[in-house]
Image (cartoon, helix red, strand yellow):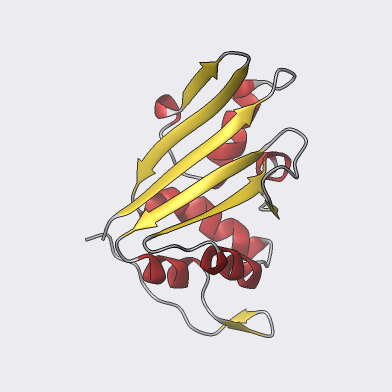
Length: 146
């Protein structure tokens, strides 16, 4: 199974790029050395592309800890087009290891934009956001990297 995760976050002039990297690393297991700081004109952004379900493990744990599995499922399904889905999360929340979904343009310092691409995206979404009842997970699936 192929899973690719693309993460992009703007870095405003008043922000420390290392803190933005830390926010990303708090929720996504990526190689710190492969995170790129890209500067275009007067704007900067951090970007990384990583592969495998392990990239999503901290995010997987955080949405359970924050008890937002149902919200996460709705957002992932709403934004799904074919084998791709996306979402925005607050950099400030990610910096303290929490997930706060947002929309483009709602965060003063910009949000972390995450795209998940998979040849079995429905299974990935079911794994990340299993069905719940009264706040308890009632159905899980195992995701094996093939």
